[in-house]
Amino acid sequence: MIIYMILGLVVVLAFLMLLLFLSPKKGAVAEQNSNQVSKNYEPKIITRTDLDYLLGVIKNKGTTTKELATVLDLVIKHHGVIAKKLGIRAHPDFDIYVDIILTICRHKNTNKNIVVKFDKELVALNPDYKEEINDAITKGLNSRGI
Image 1 (tube, rainbow, N blue to C red):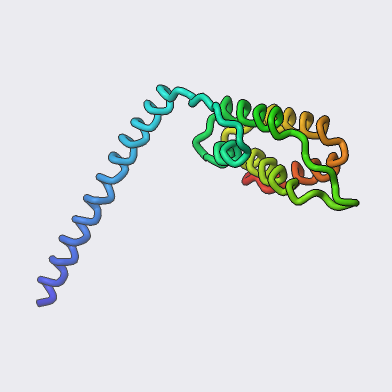
Image 2: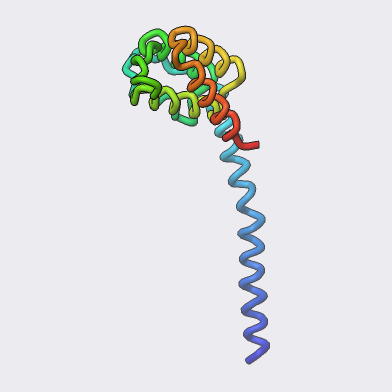
């Protein structure tokens, strides 16, 4: 009886080892296919300019560096002016811009040129918010994974 249990465990162990060695090959094939798709990827043309749509494109992890730059240019062009401060407090609409800044700082396809350009253009259009924008940039850059 003990011999049958040992043989059963050996068979189960052999089956698990077989599955272990077959799994990486499937992952490698999938990785090769994804590389081929990304090489043939055509960037989409962004025609909508509403802020919710542009924010959705920015938050999409598949957005390329070129698309990010285009979308941020559209944000500056169409939505660059933030409502005036309410006394010493920022306007509630400023939270959208903080979200955009944090998202682009954390995005995997961003680079320093995109962040710096967006920062400079947003501060140029909204000098009252310079300190708040710089704080948001600092928080975004500090929140990036190492």
